[in-house]
Image (tube, rainbow, N blue to C red; front, side, top):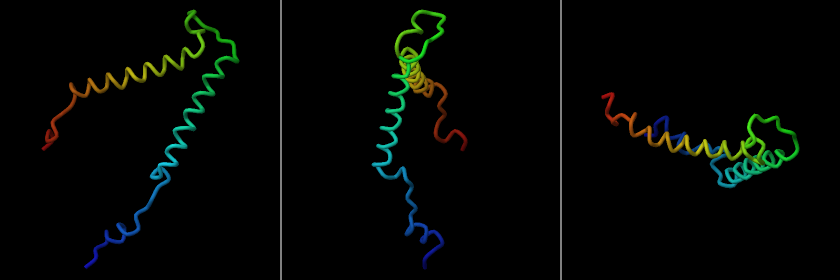
Length: 89
């Protein structure tokens, strides 16, 4: 006897990110936008407080390095803050 969930299994809904082609397009689009923003760094005058802030692509590189450090620190902090799987049982 079919239940109410059997119909949902037969007509599984697909989303646009389920296709590899669309994921690749999204990644390439983001890389292109980031590249254009770094190139745009050449075309405006920066009002800096420190000399290194005027280097080409400084803030792009700084942001990338800090993001990587944040992920690595979060992985280490997980070991400290993590609870057992049955903690709330």
